[in-house]
Structures are given as structure tokens and as C-alpha cells.
Length: 309
Ligand SMILES: Cc1ncc(COP(=O)(O)OP(=O)(O)O)c(N)n1
Ligand SMILES: Cc1nc(C(=O)O)sc1CCOP(=O)(O)O
Ligand SMILES: [Mg+2]
Image (cartoon, rainbow, N blue to C red):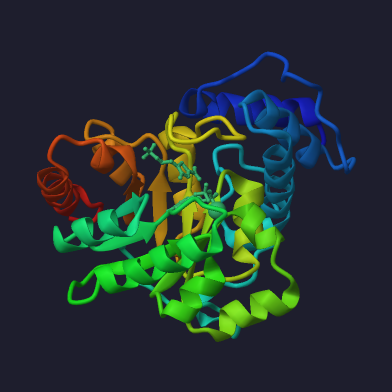
């Protein structure tokens, strides 16, 4: 295929309905890093389909790699082979530098503001809990992390600590959750320290470029958000929606996957239909009238809605 315009039109025709946001002209004209017609056409198409610049660039290279690998441009085949995105061979857990594994399906994942909430949801039977304690006070952080580790003792809950990885390691938490900025802030020595600790690592992503970045550290799971709008925090990227989430889940099969952001009971089935093995929520539990009963309902719904059941 030598005509970038024809490539762009074919991709938009094949995937426009699914990804929705078709803009006749993207907000800003794409910048091209190669003259290859499949790359250029794909970048144009992905920009028109609403992907942000870094994700359109990433996808355009993947379209080109797929076309070279198959010796054929097929507009129907949305790229989903890790190698086409420059990722190392899957499954990631088999790599020498992989973080320790965690369950493929982390199930209902409660992201909670303090140790008391962590204990409450762990005792309600929630399989995966996270302490997301936002504070600059080192003593308060240490107290809360240690209290959260104590709070899950005697339950089956797997406890991840958000952000405060050094305290989490010292306190013996099951795992740590880091965002992209948190990862960027780690020196190579600190990343090695994190790896050597034996703690599991979960990483946040918000699109293709961040997934490729997350894969470089071979984490234990990858979280993908925000699926829907959330009022919990200000997001730098627009909500992804379930069509993209499903495409991300196909690319990242081989990783335990978590969907997060604006998920409520009505949206839960369509999120699970994407194939993600876990759904992380804050407000759906913390703002519920009866959080324990809500957790039970969600766990039952997840058991009956899981893909593969
Ligand atoms: C399961 C899960 N997914 C995503 C996040 C967000 O982490 P991050 O991007 O580091 O943002 P903050 O939570 O630190 O504001 C998360 N905590 N958990
Ligand atoms: C903490 C967090 N991280 C997100 C991401 O996309 O990385 S979305 C999010 C908030 C999730 O809260 P709620 O379930 O109340 O919308
Ligand atoms: Mg963080």
C-alpha cells in the first residue's frame, strides 16, 4: 500500500464506528516521523479517531510493523501483537526481570483512603485492596501504611500500597502501585531496590504509549484508566471508553489487567466484557450507603459476568 490517504480512509472506515470520535480533521495536524505511507496514513487515521499524539504515533508504528510482518496491509486488523509495539516477548512473567506474579484475576479492587477503610473492605471479603493515602507527612504515612498491613492480617485480601513504596517494602505489604510519574521519579538503583524487595508491582496507564512504557518494567499487573469520567481526581487524559479498553486488553493479554475510573454498577458488565480480570473503584464503595453489602453485590456480579464464565 503506497498511498497514505487510502490507508487512512481504510482504517477510519474499518474502525470509526467502534472508536466513535471521528474528526474530519484532527485538532492539530499530525507530525510525521517517517515517510512510510502505512505509518503516515495510520497516524492520520488514529488522530482522526481521537487518539492523542503519543498514542497515534505509537499506533502508527505498530500498523507499519504489522504490515511488514504480514507482508500485507489489512485495515481490518487493529494492531494487538506486543512485538508490533516494540514490546519484549510475552508472557512478561517469563522475563528474567519480571516482578513477582499476582493472580490473573484480581477481582474487585477497592482503592481506599485510609487503613480503617482497608480493614473494613478486607473483612468484607474484597479480594484486592489498596491504601491510597495522600499525605506529605512522613510520620502519618508510615503509621497508615503499617496500620493497613495490620488491617488485612487474618483476611485473604491482597494489599497494594499506592505511591509510598519504601514504607510499603519496610512494612511487608503484598504489593505497590505506581503511576507513570511515580515510575519516572525512580532512579535505576531505586527500581532495582523495588524489584529486589519481592513486592508485586502494579502500574497505571492511560493509553498505548504508557502501556509500552509500563511493559518495560515487566510489572505484576497493569491498570488502565480512566475508563469513564471520574470526579475523584483531575485526569490529564480524556476517558478511554470501553472500545479502547477492549483493544488495550487484547494487546496486554498475558498481564493481569485492571480497569479503573468512573466504574459503577450499571457500567460493570460492559467493563468485564472487555476481558479485564479486575475492576478498581473508589466512590462506588466509599460513597455507598452500605459499603459491605455493595461489595458483596459487586463480587457476585463479577463472578457471574466474568468473561469465560
Ligand atoms: C489500581 C489503580 N490504578 C490506577 C491508580 C492511579 O495511580 P496514579 O496514576 O499513581 O495516581 P494516584 O492514585 O497516585 O493519584 C491507582 N492508584 N490504582
Ligand atoms: C485513582 C484513580 N486513578 C485513575 C486512573 O485512571 O489512573 S482513575 C482514579 C479514580 C477512581 O475513582 P472512582 O472509581 O471513584 O472514579
Ligand atoms: Mg501515584
